[in-house]
Length: 634
Image 1 (cartoon, rainbow, N blue to C red):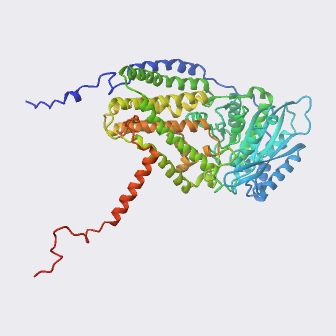
Image 2: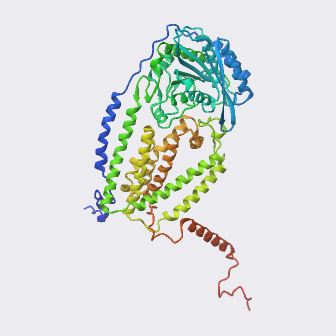
Image 3: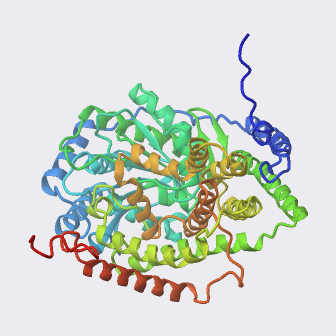
């Protein structure tokens, strides 16, 4: 007869009752709320569109590949280093202006200054070429063909190839009878955060009559044709522009153009960012697209020494076919929208935002239900909210210090544009400044910790109140993000849905608790991992993202939301790993405040250290009554 297994204690056999402090979250309400997501998913399915490309041009492109290759070779040979502010950069601007003047175009040089991290304040020049006369048959509304001519160090493909294609297109298109005005622009500072394009996009007089922008960047690489269309804001170009660019690339190269995948596009809407010159125009509501042979990141200077003639010719013909197709009906490609483009189909951004907001509702409703349960139990939320406030003060103290370090020049500062990944400020971590920031932040945490350190194990009711305070803070953060940019809910939804169940796993083993906590970190980890892989930043990705905030390119609201999220993450971690303590009441607090208590503890620690140094070593110490070595043997 088999032995009967030992019976577990009653408190371990029974599953905690629903609604108890061990199992307070209503799973039924959480699951029922998910039924609401069916409507936005249905709406997203019905809003899937298929933009039709514009008709092909009547005449085949007459882009001269040999001339374009020669222009790229001459530009690289004459001005190898076209970094902004250098003599070669100014001479290159003059060289491009003279080439454009040869084609009966009115050429204007627009100079401006910008502060570039690592270079300081420099003068840059955009070269803008327009038709000398606009006849009655030509609309004043314009199509802009654009390419930046500067580079980081010495390079050929980036962007001598785009500049050469721009000049060759000016030669061809200036002789054609067209319906719209075509403007040719050679920008400066494109390799340093799209500075020239941002200057033009911010000029209302320039952009008010612009229907669409076609940007040419690194056309002479070895990769397939690629379209880049992320903006400085969560906006996308007109679907007709992308569909026409796709059709032109396929017709002229025989290869389907590559696009960022769906998850990358979603991240570009949640965290608007691009290293290409279409981004500033999209941020200002102008439809724009970049044609390139590179990837999400432009070619690196090292190894970029030659231009592939066949690729340059094929993409030059693609650009000409795209511009002439747009000339037939450019009005339909005007304006911007928000969507995820899936190669021939797109899902509208409004439907995606609605899905993300509805995914927030199960947590909102369950958190409110949890608040009602605590009120019925008479559990006070005040100490938990004050505990969160202390953690939030530490995080905002750190954020304020980072801002001060930026003003002092310890962290990158300058024009609110993306840093070039190939420059020193984007690659070299200022370790001395970061150590100083960590030390001062730790000092702030040490002061706050005096009131937060657990003096005895917290009761389950107190832990539940602390969890609710953190969830309420996360819900507020999510609502703020939903109002400012609904796509950025991607960064906080994993935390809300994973950490909601922290009270239910509080008594599980450490692996389960750590797993639940790690799931909540997936939101902020998403952009870090994407930047590390997609833009080939590797371990420099966290610093590069931080630099986007320090220069003011990334959203300030997103930065403040991250600080509030960090305080909630700290409180949830303290609860899951048994280190939580509610904020003490006035009667429980020590007579000294946090600052005086910190000074007292520091002084006591210094005294103990000094006394330990003064104590004799074991070899010199003698125990009382031990005279065996003090007197010689008789």
